Image (tube, rainbow, N blue to C red; front, side, top):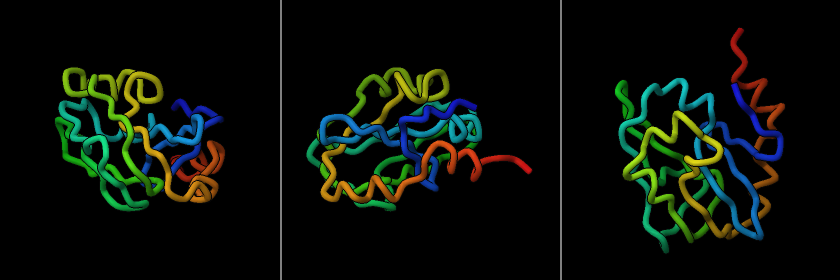
Length: 127
């Protein structure tokens, strides 16, 4: 399982990458492997607001539909439109091609409350 050290992670299996006062958000390698083949991604619109720990969209796999939970609150400033045509990017490249949204956070301190790669790795470790 891939866990980039520079990212932060939520208990709901989203990752956060800080970039120039904004955050890029996607789902983790662990999450995509649990879901199986992703066939559809539903995302909010640019300008929508998201609230930490609340759903902002969903991913549909051949097995199930799972909600996506915002790791931070803020305003959506960009969405990954590539996922409309290529939902398989979530399985192929969860940290590069399959980022989902970019948010301008309303409270940057929420990022500090997220897990480090080491903490997330411990949470997802199989017994």
